[in-house]
Length: 105
Image (cartoon, rainbow, N blue to C red; front, top):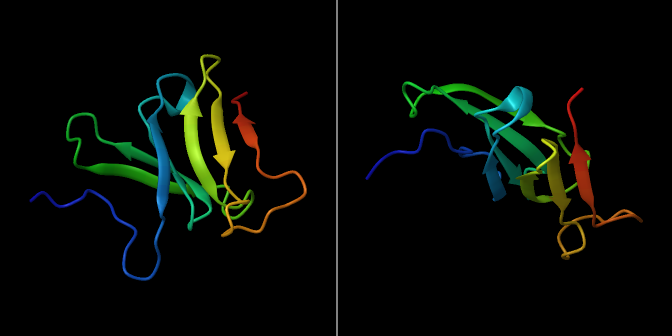
């Protein structure tokens, strides 16, 4: 068995949803994944020469949009997020659920 390069730990869980590797823009090479319970977008950068070595890890949009179900990179280079707040576990706002577009300047 191979140990994971990263895990959510004992005190919290990410409950990951969708994931994608970024191929364009400033985050090229990053692995992005969404967190349902973690209510965040996570960005993981691995060392290209040692892919089991984590270079950086960050948590983005913490609790800003609720439960995040999926992430995808569009042909325009933008990152698209899908919320999942109307599944009985989130706290839906009046405009949930939605697709969010993140673009880089």
